[in-house]
Image 1 (tube, helix red, strand yellow):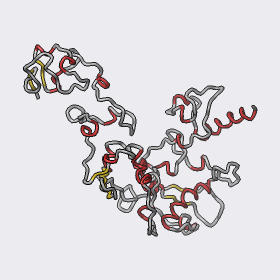
Image 2 (cartoon, helix red, strand yellow):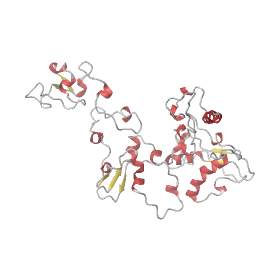
Image 3 (cartoon, helix red, strand yellow):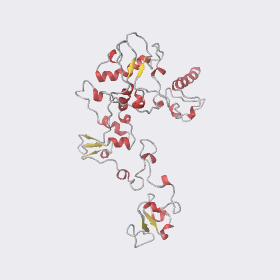
Image 4 (cartoon, helix red, strand yellow):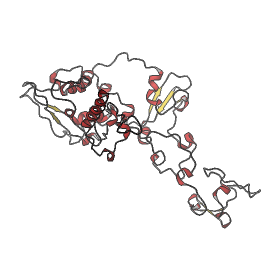
Amino acid sequence: MKIKILYWFLIPLSIFGQTKIDKNHSSQNIKCSTCHSCEIPTKENPCIKPCPRESMIRIDQKAEDAPRILTIDRIKETDIYAPVKFSHLAHAEMSDLAGGCRTCHHYNPPGNVIGCSECHATQRQRTDINKPDLKGAYHQQCMNCHRAWSGNTDCISCHEIKGKEKVIASVTSDGKKRIHPEIKTPDKIKFDTNIKHGKQVTFYHAEHNELFGLECSDCHSNESCVKCHAVEKVKSPKKLSSKEKHKKCSSCHNTESNCSSCHSNFEKGGFNHAVVTGFDLTKYHGKLNCSRCHTTKSQFKGLKNECKNCHGEWTWENFNHKITGLVLDDTHGEFECENCHKEATYTKPECSDCHEDKSYPKDLPGKKVK
């Protein structure tokens, strides 16, 4: 029993001590589920997660807003090498296709970007083998990319000999803020497949970013400089299975049974709300941002196309029919909406309940206006 109490006492200290959560953390922008595994944590049963590492990431910063050069000088074990001048801006720009800031700053409390030394000790005498010391953390973070990219992990590739340091300019030679050339988002990409009925997939890349709000890291989460800059190109790349090819798409699309939504024998057009959902936006909702109706990011299903879901119940008293381009005459102006519009989507009105010889749009219940 004592061991259990000690466990629940130490775990919160380790979590809150590292993440700098205020005592009154209910006022911070933190969900209970970030740290607690149950819906209603109590003093008797706090159900605290062992480590909310990934859930605590709260970084959304542009590369050009980050420091350009950082001096890494917390480790002083030798008189041979000078402090490392880390080109932070260049690495921040390159990380855009590999998860952004969180590629390196993998554990951050809300609203802060903390340095490595706040979690990783400068001493090598560590008690927790799951968390490397500062020197180990630096090398783990850098060596894999440098090895794959250049094939070279010699010390001098990052560390300069004392007395022989190079001067690093504070701005680029052309006066621009960026170091790495900007990676422009392609409008669309065509893929050829070996499927008989659906040889071509047209991926509208810009549409997925700008319209559906996907971040680069949502798809390009495990890529690095190697994709473009590898010294030795892979001669015979591993053939991916069908499941692996569809993995990135399956989070939003039904890749098991709805192949025709992406595959075709010709170039498919971009997203058309009326064709895909049956709800035409062009007349009244064309200028609205998607988030006005689809309030949860990357969730576009489950909405009903009934007007009352957003607008409430309409009556002849609270609805100005003129905005539809038709001013109702005195006879029809006092009718309730459902007298003419039988469907909840208020589409084409029906005249047959009152008129045997009239139909819309041949016979109008009023006057058209601009």
